[in-house]
Image (tube, rainbow, N blue to C red):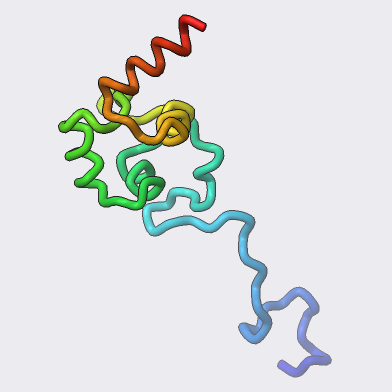
Length: 106
């Protein structure tokens, strides 16, 4: 087909197609929505901390992470709690619990 006979809305493969608003990962989940999440998976927490997922579980077993929340079989960390924990300097769990108690008293 020449340019003069081609319908205006026909895609020839030469023009770039606009990317969708949000891209999807190979698993079909949306990328770039980390800021919208209220609960972080072990993978999302690992990405946020810059460590491996296995290291997240190791830190949790050592009492170095805030306690997660169980949603059925899923284990998630409250994003607000993680942000507050990081802002406090990522203290060990025992110290973190004392900090939280002191803030509740105020």
